Image (tube, rainbow, N blue to C red; front, side, top):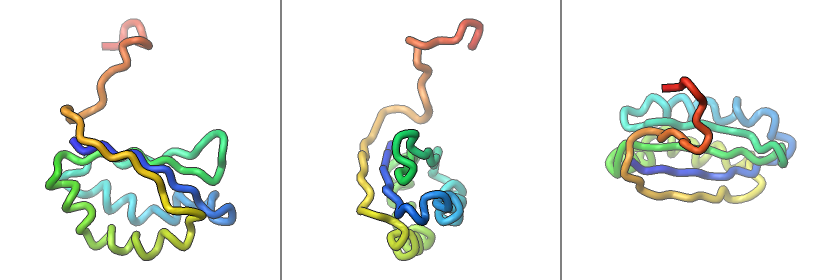
Length: 110
C-alpha cells in the first residue's frame, strides 16, 4: 500500500473550521475504491496544525487519487486557508492494513 502522512499548518483564523473546509475533499477521497483510509487529527501542541494519515491500495489507486476531480478542486480551494505548504512523508509498505502494536497489547484483545 501507499502510506502517506502530511502536516498541514492552517491559518489561525481558519484552524477551528478546517474539518468543515476540507470536508468535501475528505468525503470524496474516502469514497475512492482504492482508498484504505483518510484520517485527520489535530495537534495537541499546535492548534493550527492538522496531520493527515492516508493510505491507498497500490500505485494505481494513488495515481487515481491525484488525478481525480476532487483532488484538482482541493488544489484550488484548500491553499488559501494554509499558512505554509504542507509537509509530507510518502512511502510504499508491504501490507494492506494496520498491524497491532504488540508492545502495548491489551490483555484479552484478540
